[in-house]
Image 1 (cartoon, one colour):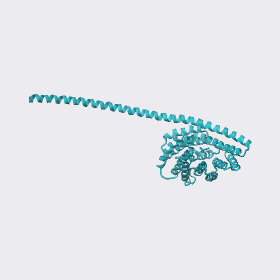
Image 2 (cartoon, one colour; image 1 turned 45 degrees about the horizontal axis):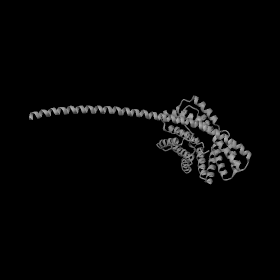
Image 3 (spheres, helix red, strand yellow; image 1 turned 90 degrees about the horizontal axis):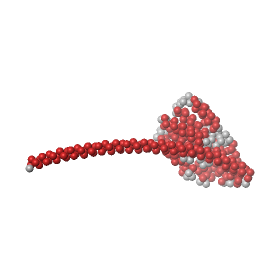
Image 4 (spheres, one colour; image 1 turned 120 degrees about the vertical axis):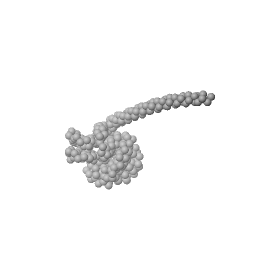
Length: 373
């Protein structure tokens, strides 16, 4: 619940170069990511079989990764992020690199690897700041602030999270619908709503949850609208408005049927369970509490699998850096040994020359003394 899917924020991945691939088909897959991710995966796999352009291959890898994140299959999502990261080694376009690193940061944020997330965000912020002013720069600076906000929110630093998310929202509201900025604003608003909720500022929380639902509805982002209703229902639950909360949860269920998002389903089932418990509706409570427990277990298993894989990946990266450091140390040691050897030879030669010169001077001095005598 606390780590709401933020992947919509980085999703409009348009290629830098014109290509022969089917842009309309790609857009269809893109539009289905949150409503029907299985169809997005099917389309992306079909397009990958024919695609040769590296930029578009990276674009489709990103689509595959985000589709799996929408299904909360972090293990498979990570596979595609790693493929994208490997392919990006040959990418020289700075905007393309920023998009790729942004996707990697999102993956790490979703998996709870916050220090790694912030490390990548620092790098992309520096790269993005060096670009000329324009929509691209504003968009990705906005995402950078917002992802930081999500990290701080996950660490219960809600005031700092609120600050970063608000800055991110400010960037996007100036861009119209560039790169799905309107839908992304719904994500920002949703998370701002939760920051206020965790700060016990329920009036402000309600305002932002409602705004998030309104913005999502304007661009037909049903899963985002469902998340907003789930957040608003939780706000109502705390205020004792249990019937109103249940109505909103039913709306969220209807909107999220095609998505299969474990985090969303878990939050909805918990909401039903909490409200039916408060109303002492024991039959419904037992039904939804069981669903909540089962969904929570499925979500945790999925996250555990991806976390184990991420540990292996990070260990491999650290081992590579360590090996590079060892090689660098060997080279430095070798250079030091060579320099020491050359210096030693120089000193020995100089010592021999000095002794020879002293010997000659001594002999001359002796000759002079004999003459004087």
